[in-house]
Image (cartoon, rainbow, N blue to C red; front, side, top):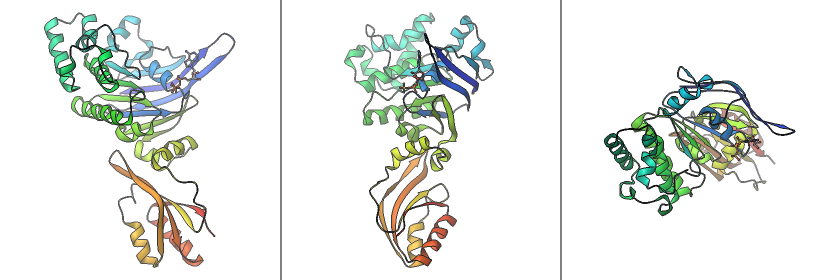
Length: 331
Ligand SMILES: Nc1ncnc2c1ncn2[C@@H]1O[C@H](COP(=O)(O)OP(=O)(O)OP(=O)(O)O)[C@@H](O)[C@H]1O
């Protein structure tokens, strides 16, 4: 659907240059919700802005199906942009226009007949649950409602792709959940491809089937969300995983293990079986199981009351049952 090949973006300043993106290669499948996560300055905004060519890439190619976005003329680009909707962290609404007029704005620019525009906006107001707010101004709306208007406006030209630039970063956790639920609903009902950039792990975990981790302008890991976060290969990926697992760092006594449960093990009562099998006491110190894209991934920190010969057998038993074991402390 979207293919990015060897994309680089360099900003030239008076006496220096900033390499914001370096040799990015990504394939975003049609109908997926693809997340790009990175810390501040990683290059997320530069990437999403290159995709719709608000920013000109320095090198590389971006394809939307068979359309070479990076080599279109301004006229061609204007036409193709109708197929790419975008929502923003700060909503970007026109403050002097009502909700209805904001949503209708792209249609007015395209000189869409009044009746068609009215029907389309009415339908979208219903989809984002703002029918009763059609004639109020943005200043009379909450942040979540403003983003709903942004979403409706992005959908008004029937795009194939929706780009979300930190779309929930200005919202509180409860409103974030509501907006993510709306994006999920839209994805299911309209079959759009959605590209999300964010620094929030909750966003990725909640809605993204696939993820790429961006660090210093490079993609350092990518794949199915469940795969990337169940076996993080880089420090920064572990940092994002810890945002959901919240492991304690004050546990320093006894025989302590960090256990990571992945697809093959998270649904199984492995701890209960271990207790029975080895006749040992297992004290669960912390941890929880998270669900990423309806698949379990989790971490437990446990203290095991076992003697030395048993200790190695226990680790062996856990690993054979697809549990990743890290020895935190062994007295
Ligand atoms: N217009 C610009 N001119 C010069 N440097 C820029 C410009 N825009 C971004 N940069 C630099 O490029 C790098 C990547 O910035 P970018 O905004 O893409 O990162 P980001 O991951 O979106 O960060 P944030 O989450 O803080 O918005 C940074 O070092 C930034 O300072």
